[in-house]
Image (tube, rainbow, N blue to C red; front, side, top):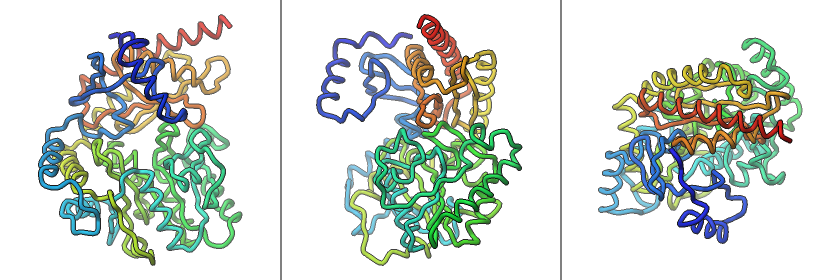
Length: 448
């Protein structure tokens, strides 16, 4: 399928208007950007009428399906009653959803605070941890990403998403987020965990007084869907507990069953118990702006000043989130992510086995990354990733990219209701895109 020529016409006009009034750093995908006008199930359509299989879901946000009837109905019915009140008033949908999230979180005596985004959720978690521990020192993972607020940027271990070195926090970075690169890549899983724990102990020796918390993504999202061996954060937790340091798990991308094996990413590391603080966003709203923080009551209630949220916990977003969560659980979409995701990753590994520009196919459930390299040097290949992104769109498939500051990883994260037939269709399109794009990239290097 061709995406059509949008160098002129409505797309070009809209893109020119976008460039005229929005920041230069607000990037859009594709040399010829597309305007997505509507969606249904696992598919979306652009303004030219082209249909695409969506393997990125608005950056892992359309978790169940586009235009899910239950969510659409909940939004419509709530909008017909009242759109907004704020947390200054009792809010039944907010309490209903908070009860569900608290029960599912695995955190004892849990309290829930709703925000409008994952960035704001992580910002709140940092506020809680630093207030509770009376310390501005934070442990974070190398290659991490936690949002675009001033505090979240200050703990992001990825220069491609960290535009300033200024920060209200002192951040100490530890190893462990990337299994197959770095100084510990050649070790066995057990040796890797042991080395990372030793690194954590060494880093703690650099801190001054109390460290507030470790914040970590169980699977790094923007970093290219990288992850440590199961059990790393349980081993970290033993060290953290000795020092009274809190563990914040950033579940903005890994939550709600996307990894298939677990409902939360932290559950692959639960040998030392649940986290102190859990942050979530993206998928729970299925496109509505919902984020939030779960913490045990002692930590959540530690703030000594007034606080409210104007838009967090809005009746309309809470109604949508509750309907979406009910659909997810009732239809066992976590199980579907495990089954269909397992088939998809094996299909992609088979497709990439003979391609010398593919370094690794990795992932869990419906959270899959394909890392691309220059075949001659083994260096990351952002050019290859961009070329595959373009070729996949031309073939009718939308995917994402990431992978640290080099952006050389293709990110695949469809809605959790993906069917086996759609997984096979997407894999076929992606295989063709990889072969076409990598050959074109190779030819371009040879010519130069």
